Amino acid sequence: MARQTVDAILKDYAQITGIRPIHAHLFRHGCAMYMLSKGVPMEIIAYRLKHSSTRTTAAFYARINPDIERALISDCMPDILGMG
Image 1 (tube, rainbow, N blue to C red):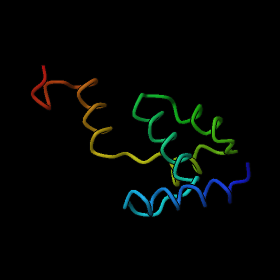
Image 2 (spheres, helix red, strand yellow):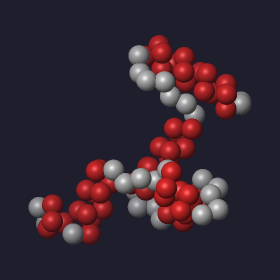
Image 3 (tube, helix red, strand yellow):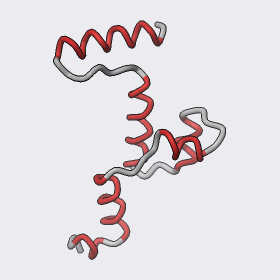
């Protein structure tokens, strides 16, 4: 199935459900974010996404969000967040 076909299907479903338009490339970003949230090293994420450099991965796909930050801090320093 071509990417354009998937994009068209996702656009139709988004319109039916009343959510903002989405496209297939968002799954790639979501996969990178999920792996990052689970502590997967950037090198592995870059390899999975077929990037030649972890810099590309870090710059465009794997971004820290508040939930990821909170989980990483609580694992490393639970006292800071009052979890220790």
